[in-house]
Length: 306
Image (cartoon, rainbow, N blue to C red):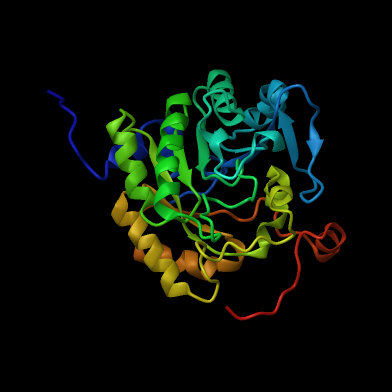
């Protein structure tokens, strides 16, 4: 007979170790509150400068540890991992996401072996793995199948937790995915793995540099990939707060607004609405000055009504 209690929310997930406790500390702001993004590519290559993000790099797996050691030396204790999946491993359903030898899982294992005390955050979404660049699996009409996608995301989250991810971060904006992932993790012995939910993720052209960094823009074959069928309409702040409330109800441990900089009002309102730790993904240098955006073609000024 199992002695494990069935609980949607476990407050102690956010007290698991000193690094996590420092990350969610409410009355102090410092380096302990920062999560550094890491773009990792297949082993054997060279460190690549990301043109759309000056000063940010893709690190090959074999050079990953030595490349980010200076970050650790300067007090960074949390990393967000973003894999650059080779084009030949992408397909319509993102099947490589569930490959136990994937770049993502190899990078998780490598980082946790080298830095066992680091808090490692890993996105749960299919856009790095799909040939079309969407966060889920589309049907014949192009509509992303919500429930089929969520089923795959649950399997992916389990693999990530098994590899050593401390926090899984569903960034797909599918309905019901937080509850489904929470249940899947708990059922497989990962009740200590926390969920950082991209709760208010807006459909935005600001993501161009990031999509370029992980290769999903090339997969999509377009400068701007419209994800309006599952990401939030920028004109709908109340809908954003409702999405976040649903994530909290389904068992999210933290809530996030993305992109953060243009939606600080949403972050403020969310902070008033929820007692959970809240944060923003500020852009990861995604919002570049106009000359960079224009020269790279990564963002376009658009005027349209939804």
